[in-house]
Image (cartoon, rainbow, N blue to C red; front, side, top):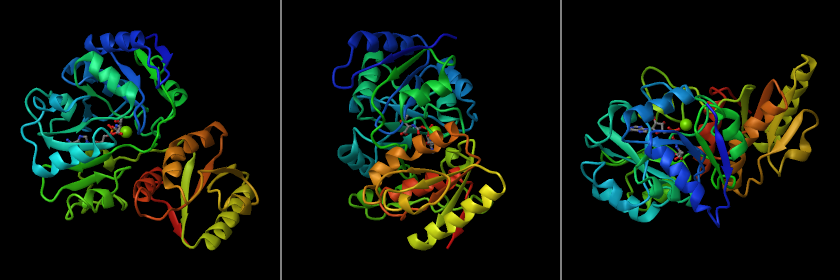
Length: 350
Ligand code: TXA
Ligand code: MG
């Protein structure tokens, strides 16, 4: 399949391009587009055959439901059976933005979209290109992250092209995604509401609206038989670059010493090692390919750079990536969730 690529100026969106892309969605095709979190791979959420194409293009397991994106609050009415009070408050406060709300679905949503669950995740993104596309196509858009299943989500158009060229009809490019980790997924079919996937909308922000809300206890741990994540997608190994990822956690000084020691051991074994460092620590590493995620004082910058940095180590053909750990607080919870999954929970504590 030939994939058309168009890069748009987010401040001055070419309406003709959006019209063409909207037509493709309407006609059952696939369009990748930027959002404020990561790039999405979109199709008409109500068209079973179009949605099936998403699963095929990504190589996504059939039991992993898709998020349905809307551009206007009115569009939700036909998609969900009810909107509990808590959900209504989250929509008022956090939409448009990086939050997906799980609600009981109506029959309009095909089983392929919801992976046969009785619920559906709805999100109203804030990115202007995403909103224009949904609005113009006049249908809700099902969109998982625009990566091949298992790989880190694309946060810029080049990565999107890398994964999807030849597999989709159209790729719309914009700026690099603002937040870099996927939306917070919150289940509002239960009381209190439960966070199934941490993101930019943090537990603290959610608790300011619903004090009893909590994070699914299964997601920050290595999955086991007794404690399975509630979101189907959170149980898979995910966000993994080709290189093996390892995390060192603890006091920063000890972390640096441990990473230097590990790097030396790998170099002795003829392995190429990447170090995922921070502005505060990067000067203290002696060997290896060192990339800083940004300053520890700006965790949004770190989340924005996380997936791109994991992928750029693959470009440099490293065998192993060793990353520092981050404080599990605020958006740091989302960063550590993605990092731990990319490392398959290979963590050394110092
Ligand atoms: O930021 C985002 O959410 C991006 C952009 C493109 O909007 N999309 C995204 O979609 O990350 P995806 O498919 O990569 O991740 C969706 C996650 C999966 O873990 C899935 O299992 C979970 O949300 N999910 C979706 N619907 C669900 C439902 N009804 N119940 C429980 N979990 C659900
Ligand atoms: Mg994904």
